[in-house]
Length: 118
Length: 118
DNA sequence: ACTCTCTTGACAATGGTATTGATAAGGTTG
DNA sequence: CAACCTTATCAATACCATTGTCAAGAGAGT
Image (tube, rainbow over all chains, first blue to last red; front, side, top):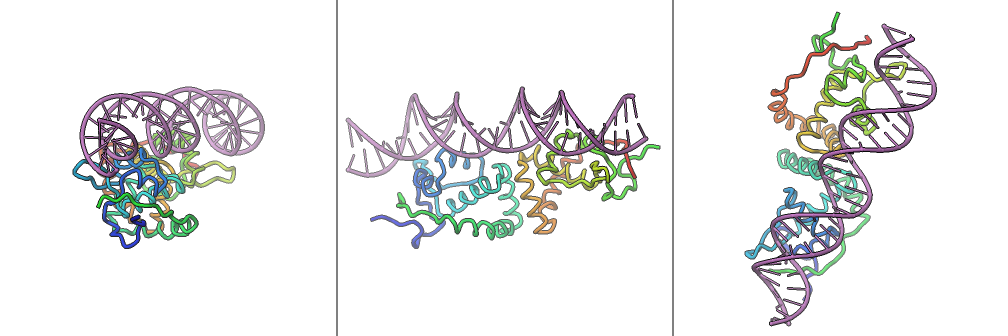
C-alpha cells in the first residue's frame, strides 16, 4: 500500500528517509546533509542513526531553496534569518511567505510514495 | 581647520567623498561602488555626480560589513534583511544591534578628517 | 547470504560570489 | 596642473553551494 504524501499525515512525524526526502524536494541528498551540518535543518534519527524527515522538515527545506534559488541568499544568511525568525516569532517568514506563495503556486509539489518506517 | 568626524555633524548630511568614506570604514572604494550597484547603500550625488556619504551611510556600511565579515551573510542576504527591516520597522536591526554593540565596543571608530564639501 | 541503502568522512569539479586591484578615458576640483 | 572623481572593463584570489564520487561500515529487506 502506497502512502501518498501529506494525506492525513502528521506534519511533524518523521517518515521519509533521505533519498525520498531529496526526491520530493528535488534536492541532492549530499546537499541535505550539508544543510544539517550547517544547522539549517534538524531531521530526526532512528536508533540506527538513519535520518527521517517530516513534512515540516520538507517545508523548511523548500524555504531554504526558495531563499537560495530565488533570492540568492547564502546559507549563513538563511541561518541568520531563521534565528531572527525564532526571536521575532514567525513574523519574518509570514512576510516572505506571502511572496513565496505566489511563486510556489506555479510549481505544484509532486506526489511521491513515501518510504515510511512507521 | 580639521572637521572631526561626527562632532555635532548632522548624521544625515552627505559630507564625505568616497575615498574618505572608504578610509573611515576601512572598505575598498571599489567595494563601496559595488554596494551601491547592488542597492545596499544609496549615497547622495553632487551636481557633478560625485558621491557624498553621510554618517548614516557609514553606519549602514558598517552594518553590512558586520553581517558579511562576522556572520558570513552574502550581499543578497543583506539586501533581503534590509528590505525586511523596512517592512517590519527596525525590529530586525534592533535585535542584531544588541549583539553588534558588544563587538563594536572592541574596535572603536577612528577619528579622521572629513573631506567636506559643505 | 545477497543486495540495496543508509551512515560518516574525504575529495573534487563546476559555477557563482565578494573583495581587491588595475587600466582606460573623461570630467571635476582646488 | 595634480589629484581625485566618474563609469566601464578586466582579472586575481579566496570562498561558497551544489553535485558527484569513493571508501568503509552498518542496517534493512528478501
